[in-house]
Image 1 (tube, rainbow, N blue to C red):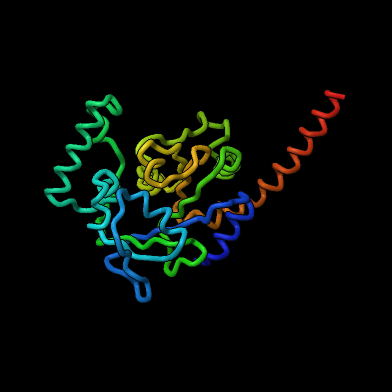
Image 2: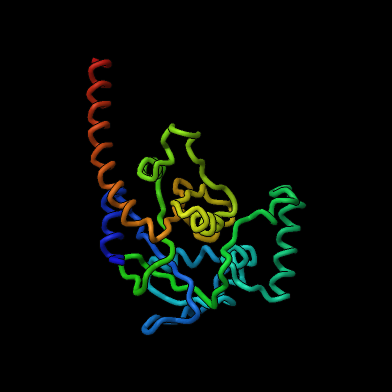
Length: 236
């Protein structure tokens, strides 16, 4: 995959101001990819760290976030599994989630020893998922490009809420781009601005999506010009 072309295409069509990143599960660090050093409080923290460079993070380095580690499909140790139960218990007692929700949260099925993260443009291997931060206007264009905004056979697809990381396995299961509005934990740990939502793009769909976005970006410019002229004609 030409990751540089995909990154440039997404950035140009969506007018991105935050670097799109990629991730891929692997049994070990590919040649030339450095190991991540340090600790993070959440799986989603890796997404922002990936904007700065490529690295490989092992499964245990994700265990600071039991829920995120579960969503990513890692085999949890008994200790981490106990922490997950405690976290879920806290959320249920706080009335943040219902007791039957955790069992329904999507997760990746194929276990892996770790994950390669990094900027999409410089990603050294074929990515598995591409993550993009969007404004509402950019998300609207993306939804048009994916067809999820179309009133055709059924109602347009909605956006995922919590946990934000569940958008990754959901996108993988659907084989389609998935939007997440971003949960409280994700916004706390990533420090992403409140006006941003997350898009998870299955890598195999990226080239087709870029072509659609490029076309629709031009279409939207024409539609915007029409509305500006109409607005001016009514108000003058």
